Image (cartoon, rainbow, N blue to C red):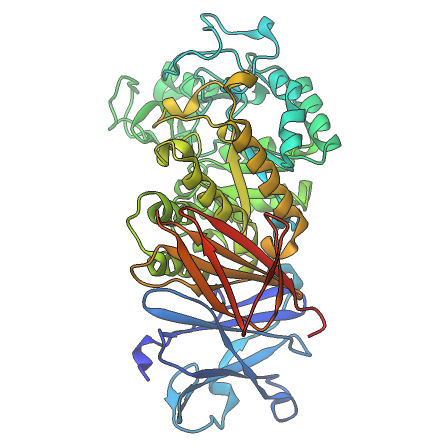
Length: 584
């Protein structure tokens, strides 16, 4: 066995409390190297009476490694542990310090999970496991109140530009909530609604005021109440990395320079500040002079922003925050942010915008979830761009699942497009069958799927600003087949818990192939997802122990003959086959 590839460390994603009674242990090994792995576990104060070997299983793999896992319930909430590694007849014991040929005699040399303290358990809101999000860019969703249209508002449906306005507002959202609820959606994520100068509102002018072109605080209360009455949660966008150039404190710094009482609210390098592209003068978001970076280490800035976070939850009733450019803000601020938000509403959802591996933010002290762009890229690379084969797709997914504790993966925000990317149908070059395949993966995967407004009626759009077109409300121009597809897909996901929770196991993902099969299994219910990403018919033949299956999409019964589940799928076809193994 290749011991150089074996890895474990206490805490983080390798040793974590899943609930008040259960600790998950993980170990990495070279792919296909070990035949068996056991965790040697016990209580350090009662080792002889409590020690035992617990079998581990591979919960995921990537291109290089297998990741073994087991769940342990220590009787006294303390856990001392090591590992037994087997490759056929070869045995090696792993301690905290070494690899041994014989069982370790001194448990003090093993790993420790010192105590399962309830306050340390990472507990995202339970509702997020079942959430189905709908993302709204308010300026482009619907114009429900023409009296608040900004000057120069253009006719609805025109060409989106970086600086133009079409009058979308929150009343427009209220007017069309039946459309959203009719899809089966139970959560909405809004891009910023606070007072700002742009159409996207990421240049905040006043964090305590709704932008007048969208409405006011009473409009938001009305919107939140209308959503809640339909079982829909509301998540707002918080831009705490930077403000806008018209933010009062920054205006004061522009006016008074080094004499401003707000000079330490920002990262200023020299005075006077120039806002015409002199990037050396102060830090900004992405070299945007109109978006000065906030100094979240400053106590006054921190108090101000934490009050903002608290106000919109306590006074308006929102259900969570999406955090813009979250990885550029200091960890200390986010730890205090979590304490503030969870004190206001323990079930609030905290979602960070991070496009890369995000484990430093997912240890239970900062975010509940991140926007799962690695998932996005894996899906697009395989199903749309055709850059990878089935094995590479499974490896990419396996690597992503290995990075986070289970509870983070269960509530991660799974998107395929957004206001920052080309639309999904455009990614698919207008091929709606490909679009549907990607959506099948999104809605049968662990985490919370999100639909970008208008995708469900066939809207297209390239990079920003083209992806921010006005919502298509003309029934004659809406794709009714696509709308029906999303409604049915959401219904299937909501009716089958294994598609939202439980393990995911790849059953077929071969190199050079475009056909893919994986299983979702939860408390005795199992669904096998079959996908043909090629332009030719594909035959699937999977060994199974169950004989009776139901196609969740067509409602037809499917029988497995001779211990094999066999089915032919047309080009870009799919099947969702369910069986119950309860009581077996």
